[in-house]
Length: 191
Image 1 (cartoon, rainbow, N blue to C red):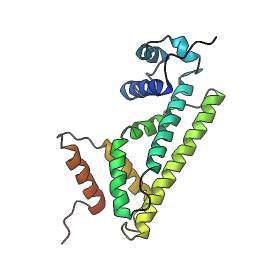
Image 2: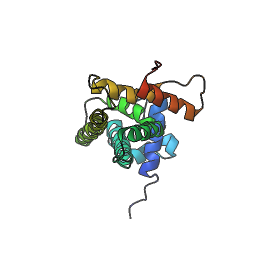
Image 3: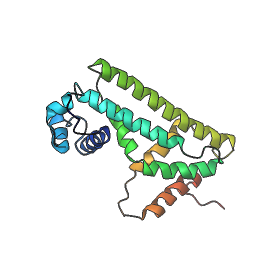
Image 4: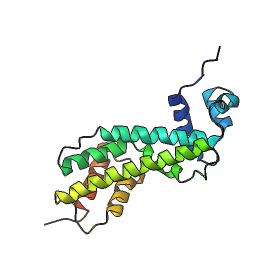
């Protein structure tokens, strides 16, 4: 009779995320993860040949979760309403910034599974980009976004808002509201 697995995927991926965010990709080891899960390294090796397989599976999990939650946003409202929902959503999903950075740190896949995972991550990334690009195009179609502004810059600004440090501990609602105002209206007074 096979032994029952001592950890769930959710627990495994949560601990993986915390280790990667705290220590970085290079410092991540199965030993550290096993210690956090209170299992032996061998328990992890039963399911993953190396850290690239595990981390790529974790990234697929995170991207799939992000896209699933993103799909639940109201896509039938006008652009300003969708804009407000999107910015709120990005702040609730602030770990996606770290996930996107990790994707670029994975070296050339060393196993077929890691290669397949990296391919799937690329598909998720393209899907995410296309959906956000569609959001920008909606703003242009409704005449809210200036035509001459490159989509890449607008998307970069939207994604980078979660990386802006709140050194003065401005209350979150005020912080997010101010960012929305700057993104939508700029910082210059208009007569």
